[in-house]
Each structure stands twice: as C-alpha cells, then as structure tokens.
Image (cartoon, rainbow, N blue to C red; front, side, top):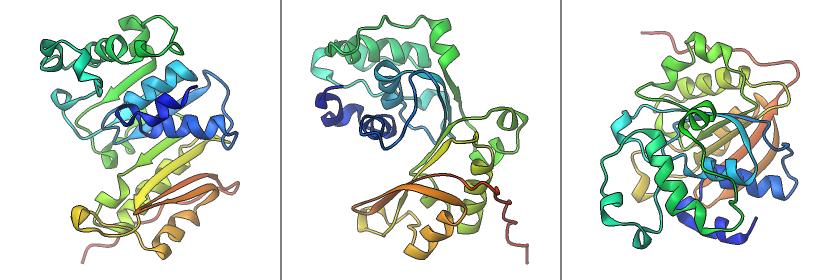
Length: 243
C-alpha cells in the first residue's frame, strides 16, 4: 500500500489506522477474515478502502443517525461533477458507487472491480437510528460474533461513565476469541471539545482492567487502546441504582 492513502485525510479513519498496524505487523489478520462491528460508524469510507487493500468478510456499522444523514466521504470534489456532489442520493450502495468511481479508482492499488449491489450488501451492513444501548440487548447482537469491535470517539460522549464502562464490557464479552477491541477516547478537555466527557488516566485504566492491552498510543488529546479478552472473561457492571 502506498503512503498516498494514509496521507490523504479524506480517506483516513479507523480502517486505514488498522491497515497501518497490520502492515507494521503489530496486528495480525489474514486477508478476508475480518468481521467488524463499528459502533458509531459516522463515515465508513476508510473501511471500504480497507476492503480493497486488505479484504473484509463482514462490516456492520451501528449508528444513531438516520439514513438520510448517511455519508461516505466523496473526496477530490474538484474532479466530481457538481450534480454528483450535491446529489441527494442516500442509499449506501449509491454512495459507494460514487466513492468507488471518484475516489478509489485514483490509485493503481485498487484494481478490483466495483461490487454489485448484492455483493456490497453482503459485506457492508448498516443499522440506522439505533442506540448502542438498545442494540446490545437485541438477539442480532447476541448472534453476531465479530473479531474486531471499533468503539472510536463514542465513550467520551456518554456522561455516565459507569454506563459507558458497562457498554464497553458487554461489547467485549461478545468479541470472538482472539479478536480485538479498538477504543479511542478523549483524555483531556479542550475548549473546542467542551461538550465531551474526557477520561482521566485512572478512568482509562478502569477500562483497561477488563482486557489484555496489546497496543496503546497517546494521540494529543485522545488515547487509542487495542486489547483482547482476558481468558477468564469479564462480568457486566451493574448500573447505578436509582435514588
């Protein structure tokens, strides 16, 4: 993979960060064995890129947003006809078609054919208008066994740290054996992010105690932690009792 992909912030995200760590042999996943649960997926462009450069088996994104707010970042707008940029198409497959045509084809490394709709929907699955608190109570969650769970830029949006920790533990419990969980959280409060609930060092350690940490990176005001299940497993944390 060329550095162009990683340098282009328009397609940078958890998917390309994961690809960096795979390329550096920090994380080991063979091609087409990735089964991903992405909690609060926002923009899945980097995971579509990951599919073309490494290969995915299944990607499932859960988000509270409505379908009409769905986005796959169409970068290189100067090369895209204006009617495409302002299009009100909202279906994931239609967004993917634009992303493939105007972004992925800019590099020689992407030499795979565009997926048809059936192929796309068999790999990329999206659950809209659903809180993670509700999804983890569903039978669909119990039947899905991802080997990578992304909880990126989510936990620091939950004001109740005990609830956030319980969500994390329940996600961790559903992780496939030898899978990894990926957490990125704000570790300090800045003026531009005053509405978030950043984590102190002790609170970060409180999350880490539930898992075996295999990689940790302090990134300015965020912390990235990647871990595995402890062999003994972890128990759910009971929410605070009502007064």
